Structure formats: C-alpha cells, structure tokens
Image (tube, rainbow, N blue to C red; front, side, top):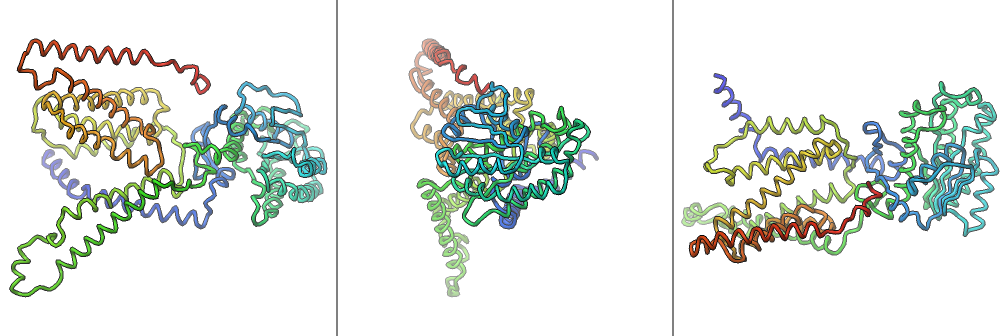
Length: 571
C-alpha cells in the first residue's frame, strides 16, 4: 500500500508540476517583479546614491547593506586611483576626525592617528568643532581663493555646541541661524564639487563621562532635524546640493554600545562611514562590478544596439509569419477543395522550417533581455551575498527531495555512460548554482567541496570528449565546429549583450581550451582508426602521445610566473 500511495502521489505531482507550468509561473513572477520595481522607482525615486547615503542595514555583524544597491569594498590601489588628483577636506569635531582617519586608512592602511590638523597629500582634516562664523569663514576663503577649493568636503558638528552650552534651546536656535548662513556657501562649493553633511550619530548615554552627560540622544535628534530642514531647504534647481549622510547614523544605532567612551564610534562602524563616502565619490569614475550604488546605467555601445535590432527584427519576422500562417489557414475555401485542405497539417500554410529559426531567435532575445535587466540595468534592486547555513542547505535539501519524484530507468549498463554523466553534471550544476546565489564561498568547508565539484565537472567534460573520439574516431571539422559552437554560442552572445570580455565567463574559455587540447592530442598520429594496422606499435605510440601531453602540461604549469607579490596587498 505504501508503494502504491507513493506511486500515485508521484504521478499526481508529475501531472501538475511540469516544465510548461514552471515556465509559466516563472514568467508571471518576473512580470510582477518588473511592475513592482518599476512602480517603486517611479514613486520612491531611483537615485541609488541617495539610497546609499540615507539608509541600510547590517547583514550579520560586519556586512553593511545599503537599501537597494551594493556597496563596493575599496582597496588601497583603487582608492589611490580615484582620489589621486582630488583634494578632500574633512571639517568638524573629533567624530569627523575619526571618520577622516578611517577614510585615510582605506588609502593607506598603515596610517597612524594623531593631531587635530592633519594633512596627507591632498587629504586634510580641519578642526572646527562648531558650526559658527569660523567655519563659515573657512568656506568663504575656499570660494574666494578658487585654486585651493577642495573637490570633496565632508562636514559635521553639534556635540561641542551641546556640551559648551549645556544643551540650551537658545544654542539650538543659534545653531539653526549659523547653519542657514553656512548652507549658502556649501551650495556654492557643491556647484563644482561634492559636499557631505554628516548627521549626528547616537551616543551611549550610560557610558558618557560627567562633562558629556548633557549630550543626549534627544538633543542630537533635535540638531539633526535642524540640519535636515536647513540643508534640504537650501537646494536649488539645477544644483547638486549638499548630500546628507544618515546611513552611518543607522549603522551606529546598532554598535554604539561597543563605544569605549559612549561618544566615539567603534572602528567597524567608522569603516562603514568611510566606505559610504568612498562609494559615493568613486563609483561613477571606477564603475566596480560589485558596486551598483551611485552608478548610472551605462549607454549601449554599437554592438549592443545592433544585437537588440537583430533580436527585434527576428521577433517581427516571426510574428508576421505566424500571422500570415493563421490567416491563410482560416480563410474560407470552396467545398470541393475543403476535403483536400483538411488533409494538410495546420502549419502547412507557412512551413515549420521557416518559422522555427525566428521563433528560437525570438525566445533567445527575450532571455537576453531578461539577463540584461537583471545584470546590467538598474530596474531591480541589488543586494550583497551574505552566507547563512539556511540560505545554502534549505534550497539544497528542497532540490534533492524534489528529485525523488523524477527518476527514469537507464537503458545503458556500462559505467559512466552518457545518461549517468549527464545526471552527474546536472546535479553538480544545481549545487554550484545554489553555492553562487547564497555566497557560500565565505564558508570554507562548502567552498572546498564545491572546488571538488568544479574539478569533477571539468573532468566529466574532458572525459566525454575523450570517449567520443576514442569510440567514434570522428576527427572531422564538422564535429569540431559543432562542439565549439555548443560551448561558446551562449557565452559569445552574453559578451555582446552584457558588454563583458570573453574571459569574464572564465569556465567556458577553460573547457574550450581543453577540448582543443584533447582534440589535438587524439587527432595526431596514431589515431583510433589506425588501431587494427599494428596493435602493439599502436598502443606504444598512443602511450607515448599521452605521456608527452602530460609532460607538456607539467612543464607549462611550472613555467608560470609567480604573481604572489602582485596579489600580496589584496591578501
């Protein structure tokens, strides 16, 4: 009974969960997501740079996720490339000074923290702990001098005003007056550069010293409200305006309890603030692949435009052929001819061979358009990969359980036959896909096992090509072109559509290279077709040929240049 129930349940699931239904569900979900994200961007604004600076959350303990986009983690060489000719000025109190040191450490990781007036090439910190006339005069001097004007200015101040004046309401009103006068000059600086105002981070009131007890979170909120009201109201049409940085404050809300004195942030949170500024200032210039914040949609190049026209043209031709075929089939015919027409297949009006290529190109155009929307366009929001055990193992278990209901009997009995190797490669593809989606490379045991799967997949590919040449002995150009086309067609189209280099899809160049090696080895003398001529000599020659290939691979591997020093900084 249990076996009968299992069989009936399996048949019921297979009846409803078909490939056609799965495709239909996937298509509906994609359309719904497109509508949702399009509406969200239309009503909520689509400026990913504003998302970067305004809000975000922690994934785990140390990975900061901005809302709707990915933040690139800049290395020293990248930061130097971006900021080599830029003058960056940090103006404010001790909190801004700490942010300055974290910013500098991105450029020079070994830089030490000391002093109130610090200069590092074109990177300066200037001690102005209050938003008053002294700060305004510094801004005015930059505007008047012209040549000394910084390209990037980061400011922030409030805690000293609260501390020196006991958090009085009169001081808050004076802060608003001073900031209103300063905002005009900040707008002038923002016309030719970038200006950031850092909103005040929270404090841990219990850990504050006695002379700082008046710096409460309630006071800081009042000062932040004033800053937001003044600086948002100072923006004019056609100007970039002052950019308010609130995301670092959100990060501090979760980590301020780790502060040693209750006022200054822990180093991990300051790094988040420094990376926020680095991404905002550099992403448009360097355009990192994993940093979608503050990047505009790249313009289509000529190849992309021609490819889009080709796919659209194929869709138009297919629609015309389909329309003509249906109309011709449905038009009225005389009675004496009707019996003859009924004997013809429904698609005889337009031969299937004419429509099939355009139908395939139309489908591929839709798939490539979806790939482009996901990878290159900014329609969908993007998020960092963050590994958790549940994110990797739950989909894995689900796939394996689902696979129980789909089994077929193999017609072949020999070891590693075609059906076995295809199923093996299919399971490995599913595991590797889940591995990449869940970011499981961060978990060393999973990473090591997936490396084994990749090696096994490469072995299976080489084994399949070797077996074909060994059993069939077909070394014709037709076979070579078929395999090269099958391996590279999708990747070459992706290179054109996505504007990526061929080596970006590294696995396909790898298997293509080894197919050429296997073909070259098996095609040279002695070939499998010459086995019957002289069996002993043939076996010795084949053995010598394979040993020669092994020696060539070993020599080629050991002759590579040692690049360990080149990657030393990244490690």
